[in-house]
Length: 471
Ligand code: GLU
Image 1 (tube, rainbow, N blue to C red):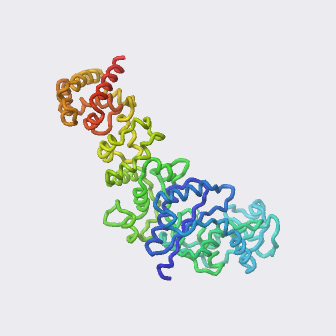
Image 2: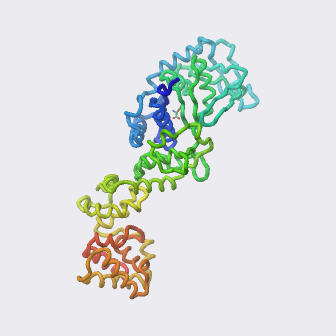
Image 3: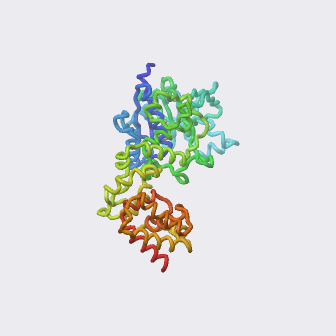
């Protein structure tokens, strides 16, 4: 096989939110296809009619596009239901060739015949030569003898003894195929050479390898990426962990940071490098270098990556990325109170401090709201008796002096003096002023903030805080 014939596929089921596990499988398939100048196929596995919904398919496509994998990057999307006839045909072919048989056993009957319920189906109908009929499922005849050996690029050689593989169902009584068969038939039809997916599918793989062979094809290259776990080493779960790609997008993660981080789950480009654009990773990546043990999805690390990526943006790019968070619909201020010029001035200071884009809002809201939103904890901490009122009163006097130039440096000098008069270092002295003006104890550099806010608004806020303190 020449490299250009490589065909990978991403085969999500539209039965829920596009999650980090999907994104990781997507990236692996995309990277391998790109590396060899091959093709990635997108196949939406929508045969579970009860659970599949068109809006989940939309969600898949938009999350992929957000990650930079838009329609120009894949063949498809194909819909698995469009291939239903092929699935049925394949099932019938296996039946005709004696590789599958009908079975009318109920679960209860099978269980009643076995002393060990873990053993699965006992092959009762193997030689009964039943015809198709209501209540009759089609089972694959698992050959006896040698184990099936799955040669997995990530996990190495994995042996599956056939005693542990029951004659599994490939089609329901109504003729429709089960996932295990439909998935293989589609891969065969679509000329897939590499099946790269999550570890949860490893248990399907011996069955699927037998089906590939039964259908007359050499099996593809298999690669099962390790399961993703949280900080407690629990498998990521959509009920417990933040896994939806949409939440990360909405919070203001940059797709480049997300891609970079996801690629490092179980793999490293070497030389201790971590921050690396995907284009540089593509030539370095190899499935056989992926570690098979569970990979810790560390949200804190992802956040730190995101901060790095944000800081690496040109200021204009940062401003453009912030734009959606600053719009009236999302921001706490009135649209007409937002001043793009003021924002552009504060943006470089904010850029070095936010880890996710949505954090821009609490950092700059004091500039565009009539009054700051007080964080009560910050208030109590900064406005302690003996400091709060004293500092505010003196700051008002000092800042009202018209000879004070309203710029960051002189403002700092003025507050330093005020603090010294109260026996306070600048760090302590500025806390009441910061809370009075911005509502919080942490935020952007204070004096640049005051400069932008202007003398009048600063004084109004200092007086209002003093009144609040005294009331
Ligand atoms: N549709 C399956 C899933 O979303 C993927 C199957 C596969 O990749 O083979 O889990």
